[in-house]
Length: 258
Image 1 (cartoon, rainbow, N blue to C red):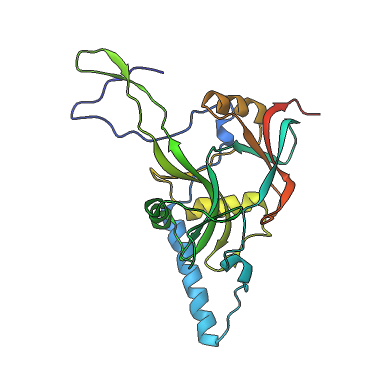
Image 2 (cartoon, helix red, strand yellow):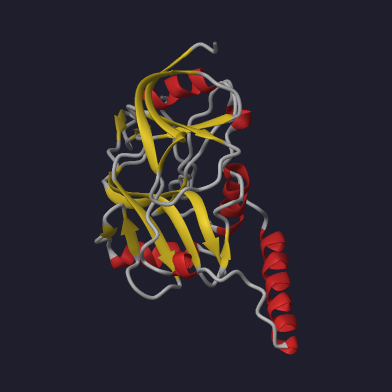
């Protein structure tokens, strides 16, 4: 940590970020630019107008997607796993697992056992940052998130640490449906790219960062930031609602590649 002085005219606006590592170039939490998001939205609108003009409805029939019976995919748990190819690594958030159902009737958040009681203000924040009409986003409701503290200087030049107050956030990491289109069969990395183009991060809405190589070293970085476990995910895997598969593994330690 380094002490810093604020520029004349007041404090600079802090932007929450993740500390980099030797593999920082692999951290995928960038977002599509606004013009590209607008272009994709226009394409979807034109496609729907074309369908309506022909009297067609070629969108998938997503009875399960649009219903409340869709449950999050469950990970397996293991104390240690070897670093393997074709997997990503992301932090294991501590909180309540939930699917955020944007633009759908019924409950706003659905967990393993059904409806999850989440704050309306947080749901509104997610909906406000989602560039779509409807979506189902997988993530974790974190009730006591604190941004990283930094050293600051008081008017007398003395260094101190300003403690950040805890707040509730939604940490998103997967996308199951957008505007009536199912993404369940799409590979994980492609779903994450759709999520990055859909959801704009804010104070209360986070995109979960991940790496595709250097998993062991970044696991150490996450541990230093307060995460006790990490999640290994097969980047070619489809989404398995309500099921437990080996494609998602929550682990405490990663050993060398075999």
